[in-house]
Structures are given as C-alpha cells and as structure tokens.
Length: 530
Ligand SMILES: Cc1cc2nc3c(=O)[nH]c(=O)nc-3n(C[C@H](O)[C@H](O)[C@H](O)COP(=O)(O)OP(=O)(O)OC[C@H]3O[C@@H](n4cnc5c(N)ncnc54)[C@H](O)[C@@H]3O)c2cc1C
Image (cartoon, rainbow, N blue to C red; front, side, top):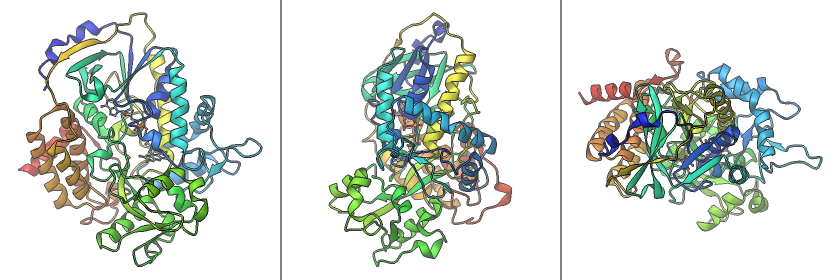
C-alpha cells in the first residue's frame, strides 16, 4: 500500500459535487457529453484519442436501421453469438436504443457513410443476418467517431479533461466509492492527486495487455476491472475473452488488426501450403463465429503450417482505398496485400466479462458506475457479436448519465482536487520482469485453448508474481488476471470464447453467467495453492 493514503481525509470531501469519469474512450466521452452541462472531470491515462480501443475500431457500430432489419433479428444474432448466456432483456434494451444513439453520434458530427440519397450505408459482418454495420470510409469508424466526440468535448465548457492521469485507486468509505487517486504525467509523476467525487464512472476499457499478443492499446490492462474488484464490486463472466482470429503477425505489440470486414468481403484463410482450412472446420468457413475461426488459425500456427488471410482475389486492387489502415500496417511490414497473403495469428481482442452493472450502469458498490468494455452488462454472454461493443458503450453511457442526473441533484458546491501527497511508488511498469512474465503466462494458459492443469499452474504463478511485485498498478492487473484465471479454472466446459481442451463440450448445467468477487477468486487460488 502507498504510504500517504492516511493523509487523505475523505470526510473533508463531503458535499463535493463532482462526477469523475475514468477513461477518455467512447464510453467516457459519450457519458461526459450526455451529462453536460453538469460539471464532469474526465481522467484519461493518455491524451484523448490515444490509448483507447475506441479510436482503433475498424468495423463500425451495429444498429438495426435498414428497412429489412428489426430488433428481433439483431437480438437473435446477439443471442446466437453469446452461446446461451446472454441476458436477453438487457440485450433487447441495448438493441432497441441503438438507432437513437447512432442519431446522437450523427448530431455530434460523426461522418457515417451515406448513399447518394443521404441514407446511411449499412454493411454486413460475420454472424450478422442483415446489413447493419454503420461505418466510416471502410475501416475508419473508430477514428472518425473519436475525432468528432473529442471536438464536441473540447467545445463543452462543463467537461474538464485531465490527460495523462493514470488512476491507481478507488477511494472507498464503507460501502461508498467517494473518489479516485491518480498519478499525472502518464503515471510518471511522484505526486498523486486525489479527486473527490460524488459519482465515479469507470470507463477504462479492456484487458488485452494482460496477455502477450493483443490488438488493444497498452492502456487496456485490466486496471479498472482490478480497481473495482478491489473496492468490492461484483465481477461477472471474467473467463470469457474474445480472441480476434486475424491479427497481423508481424511481431508488433499491440498487433495490428486485419478487420473482420475483409472476410465479410470474401477474403479466405489459407495455410502455407495454400489449403483453405476453415472449410474443414465449419459450414460457414471464414464467416464462422470468431472463436471457431480463432481456434482454426491457432491450430494451423501451432502445427507450424502458418495461417494467412488471402485478400488478393476478393479485395485485390481496391485494398488501399477500401481498407487504408490495414493496407498501411501491411506495407510497413513489407507485405503488399494486393498481391500477397497476410500472415495472421489470434490475439486478445475483447473482454466479454467485467464489472457487473445493471441496466443503468450501476455497479454493486454505491457511488460507482461503469460503462464500455470494463463492464459486463450481460449483452455479450460467452461471445460478443462483432460491432456490438461500440453500441454497448454508447447505450449504457447514455443511461448512466440519465441515472446520475436523476439520483444526484446538482449542488453548487465544488472543489478542485487536493494533492494526495508524494511517494516513490513505481514510476515505470513497462520494464518490470513480472509484467512480461504475467503476459506470457496468461497467453499460454488462459488463451485460445485452456486446460485445468494449465490454469492451476497459472494461478500459482500469478500468486508468486504478486508476492514479487507489490506495486499498486501491478496489483490492479494481478487482480484482473486472478479473476480471469480462476473463473476459467472453475468453468469445466467449453462455451463461446472459453475453450477447455480437457472439457471440450458445452455442459447444460453451466448454462449460466459467472458472478464472483475478488475474495471468491482468492479463495479458489488459496485452495489450489494448498
Ligand atoms: C483494433 C480494435 C478494433 C475494434 N473494432 C471494433 C468495431 O469495429 N466495432 C466494435 O463495436 N468494437 C470494436 N472493437 C472493440 C471496441 O473498440 C471497444 O470495446 C470499445 O472501444 C471500448 O470502449 P471503451 O470506452 O470502453 O474503452 P477504450 O476506448 O479502450 O477507452 C478506455 C480509456 O480508459 C483509459 N484508461 C485505462 N486505464 C486507465 C487508468 N488506470 N486511468 C485513467 N485512464 C485509464 C484509456 O487511456 C482510454 O482513454 C475493437 C477493438 C480493437 C482493439
């Protein structure tokens, strides 16, 4: 524990009228805009627009808006992807509110692709039965959405954005979260700053960097999940991690992505011998659910046959203009996707599990709300339907804003943050050997294919790494890793994003969500340690 926490007197924070949002991705910024003109402080580990998965989204947002599409059809696809454990009521609510949130984004200036008559152009993606993906210039959706929201946020005087503030702790008083402690200068400052708050909204994104190969930015390291769990929040479905089947395998960290839309447009997966292996594994071949494709690619890579996404026929000469981001990543690595197959590997892409929230984004701890990838609303079940995550981020961020406005009437009291003192806590985490080992071990044992024995050794290793490195930012990551590993160990079946080689079948008695606290995870870890 840091030495100077005692110097903070939470009682002095009472009466503070401030809402603190942790994270400046889509969920955080959308929530801040929806709360305007109420004063809000957004704390973001990196400058907004950077260090957020939202800016990297290539596909787009799913919304049932085309003439032939309905809420029921979008719901049916979402339920099918989620492998039996989607919360149907919550998913229906999200899908029903989707079109209104797309209209909100348009009103903030997002330039979604339109046809000649001004209608939104909707594309189809894997596992969607209709054309319902709202995109911007092929693969530019995330960048364009974030650019528009950042401009709107900068023009909203009630939103104070503090960039480079890495939140390290939630301050808990009894059953209330009453603020956060953050470290400025991208976490390099010796001084920590306390932000007292009547409401904290956690929007810190995913967990990719708990693993060695991921498509997520380095800031997505499970910190928000870990902090909420340490504050006593209930966590749901942590074992369900989605692997993107086609990250571009050129040794970059994070790994660049060959968007799903390429397969939607007819690109095929082949091994080094040119064999189209997905046709052996699933009737939908390359358009099979993500976890099936990820395991197919993983098996080819592991067997030494390699896996390649061949776009030469399906996209060919149009590659540069239709998929500029993917094109640039390939060309940087000396691969011309117009004429050459792209080497691919599965990478951690999305976390279905997270902090349990209700329909209003409330966690089980008072004073703490959460939105976006850090949460588990129940809409994804065991596997996310592509492009439902940006939708989830905006729908629940908007609901949180409504809920907070209703629950916490605005008061006139306001104070600027107090200095939380200095300490010589960790300055850099990146060069820690424990971090490198944690990521390696998570990829090896809690990855695409898991086993009970492997998970046991992983859980013991996590406990050892926690003893070796007691620093707070590492301990947030360790808390998140513990939850994922112990939930994966307990779930003795395979479902959606969770595949156990020692229990390869879906088991009916497991057709339910997982609910666990950090204490539950620690009990399981202690049993395993003997
Ligand atoms: C390459 C890629 C492509 C994707 N494509 C799509 C797609 O086409 N469609 C779709 O629906 N989904 C897609 N996803 C998933 C989707 O982008 C994310 O689920 C979504 O953007 C999450 O939004 P968020 O606001 O919750 O998190 P993020 O956008 O990741 O934002 C998190 C914010 O929290 C900050 N942060 C993290 N930790 C801290 C801390 N300790 N203190 C302070 N700040 C912190 C980060 O810096 C960042 O500002 C994609 C993901 C990736 C990685």
